Length: 369
Ligand code: DP6
Image 1 (cartoon, rainbow, N blue to C red):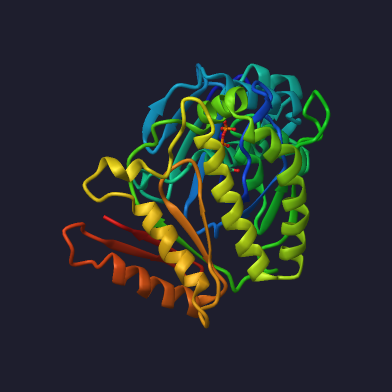
Image 2 (image 1 turned 90 degrees about the vertical axis):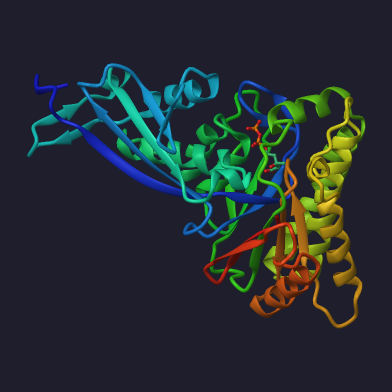
């Protein structure tokens, strides 16, 4: 490292959106490397909404690695942060800025400390997953800062070690996380199936049912399922491999009815695996702790009825490890018709204050009480 001055600082900023799995990742075969037991497929949301923005900085004057999340300092001591930082430092490249007289050798990155500031552009209180966008953004911005010369699929193996689902957020559009076979995890990577322009009529509605933090994290939930559920083995070995092929075909052909059928079935099977876990995990029932019972089942039954009703085009729904519904409509017209239907069942004037956020023309974040 040249320049004895400790006054310089280098910065990089990146933004990464969250992604919603339509064929779910649930279960690890290696906890430390975060290697899954099945492939998964997701759709990445529009980066203007539900994304993380991260600025990373390096300076010889920094005395330790530090991170702030939404303005509050958090600890970087966890293994997942440390694994990502180590992997990135191992791959860091040389950096020179002649104007500022800065020269950083590859090995200097092990001595330099980083500061990381990350913000989510959606209310944290909305209870929406943020680790996927957060780790994707952390890895991408640090890779830029450290001059890491690796392609996105290689970076996805690092983001994966922060949070499994994060590896899919490095790409837009439709993304597949291939589980891989190698013990090292080198082939457990994300690949883009189709970019964001491929099927851009789709509209995603995020129906916020509860803003409470989930009681069982995905990490511990899937550990419990791997240890105790017998259904998860059948799902990983038999059901998902065939669904992945069908989903890839549905996406390629923009076949919405197959896409919707597979998305709903996979979400429901994932929640069935959760119920098959001992002790059972009930993500969709979280709202039962509030005075308004079974929001989810109501949303599901409204949507199932909608799909059975002749003349209404199908919509897809999916629920992650929490009670919020993500609904995919084939186009804007159907999205608006459906939103009207939902507003009929969850009218704004009721005790449960309902507020809605229209997130551009592709996504609608809708809050139910
Ligand atoms: C239900 O990626 O949050 O959203 O790898 O332990 O960090 P870790 O888990 P995480 O799990 C996501 C589970 C899911 C399904 C999915 O996104 O595929």
